[in-house]
Length: 224
Length: 402
Image 1: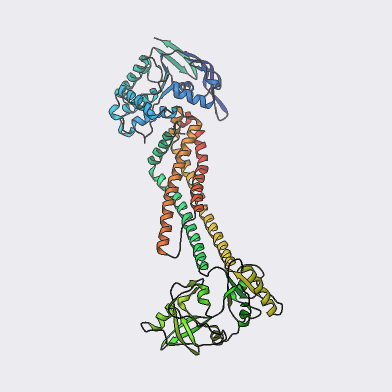
Image 2 (image 1 turned 60 degrees about the horizontal axis):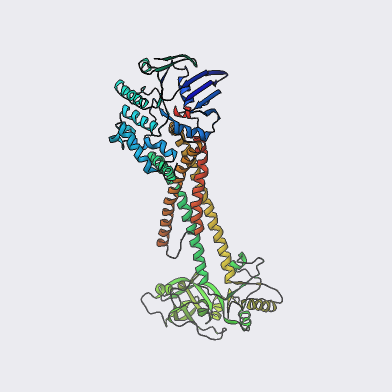
């Protein structure tokens, strides 16, 4: 489902060129649960941004569902992000002035779905994540765990093929963190591909497949 | 993205940043309101002058001593600087034309009027019987100047209402003798209050026969000759006849200015219309200033919401959608500001009309349309830059807030 071939990503910092990603070759099949581990600056976030089509490779090729992402124009990229990819961020990234329900339906709004069709799907998503009584609360009225569950509901509302989670438990206490991970894993059980970036070894151990990154390279690729 | 969602999103963010929204609305609405108010004042002035001139009556020709090189009302015609006097004989010669229905020679001066021990300065008008119907004035009581030979200096006068009130108070004025300068005149009529015309309030004038006025003011020359013709069609003939006759009488020299009400009206109309455009232009500058304000605030708004824009991109908003969202927000703001300004402007000009009933201060249609249009266009133009800035943000950096 995800295929990276000889991916390089270079940043120019002053006079120096930094290799954030150095010749990455990676294949992830549909329904996999992969954790990406590594020290900070190892390129794990860059890898995630690249898979999420937020960032572009300096060279190499990226296929998502057999489509060559490298050839896409800006409009196609946006559509691909909207349809195929769900993001879960460490800092939630909810829009403070919108209610939980409005935050969750945002990807559908951007996709141009009419309101009556959206309502049904938003209700369903909130039901399954236990958020139904929080529908009309704004983010500042929700707990951290609830906020992240709203963000997960938002990430899954378009029924994407892959969820990309960058340190999803980084801003949460342990109990809420485990709840969030349980939620994500439950989604993976239903068939969604799940890629989690973390530097928490406990979290890394939970996934069947674990990638270890150092200096922009995949140093280890272990399957349990 | 469907349009109602785009508008809802813009509306939500305007509500989300209340202080900035209110400030922008204030700037925009003040600009639109000032365009409406200023043009309403200009238009009111134009209508006022128009009405004043209409009260002169149509088919009216005015002869002014002195030659004016350019057409219209010039300095010399205003000041009455004249190389050769315009006399009663000149006026009489003009009655020969068949199309002339009425003719009123006019003398004007300032003298002191007194009755018993009350005194005041008045404007003295010397004229003839025809002045009343020619100017469409009306009498309140008594009668107007008698229809006698122009050369007879009869000691009678017709006074304005205000003069009657100030000189006579509660006493009956008709039949009383008042003193004007050295002479005494019997009051035979009182003017009704409606009679008003440019720069001269009939209520504050005293009208006496033209020959009496010439004697009193000690001048043989006339201030004006007013001629009424049978119809509009005959006006040009009478104008030509007037010019020819007076040139002949003044030894071949064309030393009078003949104007029609239309020409005077046109001149004033042009001046006031230009003034209205000028103030509208000045007010429009404030609209542009409001536009620049919108640009600044939208730029701040974009930098405040960088992370949000990054999120929208991550959720699948293309550059075009971001552009559309920001522009819609700015347009909503301009539209709302313009609407509020419109209401303020219309209420304000209504207030002016209440305060000054003679002043029909309605903002002209073009000013209403133009102010709304300029508000929307500047709102749109000046938010293009911030919107483009937002659309071009790199999503990875934007999500991190920079």
